[in-house]
Image (cartoon, rainbow over all chains, first blue to last red; front, side, top):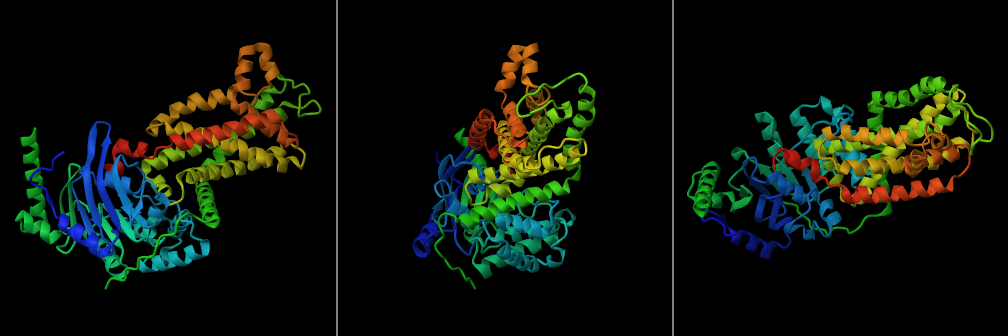
Length: 271
Length: 281
């Protein structure tokens, strides 16, 4: 299938980085996925580098969550290849998932367990000993400012606190790649800013590669890497600055509007 | 400043990691059970109602002759006690599967399934955890039943333990296999009616098979082929320190078959696709 003329793929970015920096944190190569006859993803390819913040921008229904389900092995890969630090998710899922932390869009905390119990359970699922898990849990709860609530039930937390706890949980086994799927949906402005700031800090301080799926333009900064996903296709990828420049737009919002409009026009002319 | 250090990822998992994962899943299942007190109470009340009301009413109607493993005439309450123990496990096995459908729909299963350990092992741990909870329920039932003159030999409380684990695993695996074919939570209630009640009534839980045979030979054959009958008999014999080898073979074989089927058939995308992964598709 040919790409519509509107597609901007800064292949140079990826190729240069691969040559210079070695293995990407996440490599998506030619991924397609269908639900029955409906195609949710169509030949999606991009990389996420270690110590980088990559925003996966797309409207609801663009295929972001499907892609996340494939990266986390919840769905089997139908076409293409997904590598996490060089480990193929299909062939070596254990090695790949060990390096991956994930925050799903729906809440996946056990509301009837305490904060500490949720973290200890997650640690056990990664084979981390109880003693080590306690140490890491205390450290992470302190870092997200919830140490004094370690024994409280999760259902008593606010939405923003739950999200922070989910991020802490995703970091408990010390992954090198973090996926966050619409992590700020339903949160107030302050909670959103806190969470975005916290994740950006993880990139700069701990060198974690982050794939941040969102439909909110204001969460993207010009220095971020950007992947624009629309109707299952990648319309543009590269640094946000470069995508904006190449579309001739003034900001991400306008660039997205132009790309999707051109895509729709190209599709209607195809049909 | 970036402090990225790329260290080679370890391959494989140690026995300790497998064990930690298993204990973690069992611990979590235990905690959830403790938090759901009404589940514990209803799990206990159901067999006790059968014991106190049904058995009391039927003891005058249904005389039990001397049949293995019993060495003398026994009251009807004593006869149905192993059947009620198996009933606890049957309900618990199906309820655990129900919770898996719920967890799949609500997204909690994702936490489990993104663990790096093999998926078959994670599902096995989940089954074992559910079984451990059902065994606790059975012992709680036996404790109450003791006051109702259900007093098996002291050693029987110990010898029945492996039988309970095996039958619990079989019924849990059956529940998981059934839940694998269910697309949404609402469908499960219907399936329960077609599984739990036929399995329970077409078995030796409430009446010995020779009595069934007198009334309907084909029904007796059906009961004989019912794996739940063999779970009941395995528990009955083990409770009296004896072994029913045929039942052991049937329950063991069915456990392996159901477990393999459940693991192969388990598809985490089933609950996600209906409303889309994370709310979208």
